[in-house]
Image (cartoon, rainbow, N blue to C red; front, side, top):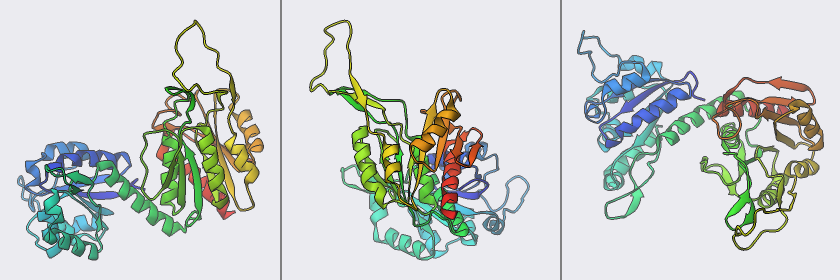
Length: 404
């Protein structure tokens, strides 16, 4: 969790320095406070004015302010921060950090840092794989630094390898996951070591090879819940419908398309799980027959006969054993609470996460959601908030079930 965390962002002289703007936006959006420290060569790639406009803080580069001679204390920065992130970090800066060559403000801040340090290398492939660079990385790891390995890149020759800086959203997520794990360890999170099954996204029910019955689900809510469970120490299996969302590689992801495929995957996985959170927007009906060729427009109307799909929530509810927990979702357009209460009993769920299409700017395709949690103990209403925060509320409620 990055909310209220103080992050020192170190920027070195790399062409990837422009991506620091995206990192800053991601950190601030997650609730962090950011102080930029930049090397003199870093200012050749991005201006301090741009960075200070994003952080609302003066950028630190020199030991003394050019205006009034004020001394910038690297020691104070080391005590202020909850973490230091150096992104991008060049091969030159890696070498200086590994060998304590304190010739600029960024390196002295690094050497004074009391908080965890995260390093995102950025260089071409040949520099990255050179023995001296690898030796420096190994040394920095031995010092306890967290190396955010660069993403796959390409040389002009087409040779595949590592080199360019990892993507900003992945870097921000790495820090977020780190603090969540710290928090979970401090709280002895009841999800630690548990196996949680999550379904997310829509299902597509084929009409013919090019058409389907589906819905607008983006999968954002289910993926946020999966990430949140992972950060609480759970072993996560995510069954995802056809979406474009990405998740941590530590999540066991199973991609499916139809309700039939999701049903088979869920019923196979659930017996080995401690809990399931069914967030997917599964189609309730599918065509009775699927045309093997594209249906042509040959007349003025087309009649499709539909039949019910599997009720995955009811199936898992019937399978549920003592010690297992089941969370289902209810998206309603009217009579929301009454429909959710019926679903609670019918699906044998521990609680229902209720949301409504009448709450503008929530549900399908949005970054926010507004939910109520309905259980046999009553109803809890929550304010509209980002889906990652909604995920925390839902996972908090699941954690309480394991504590009771």
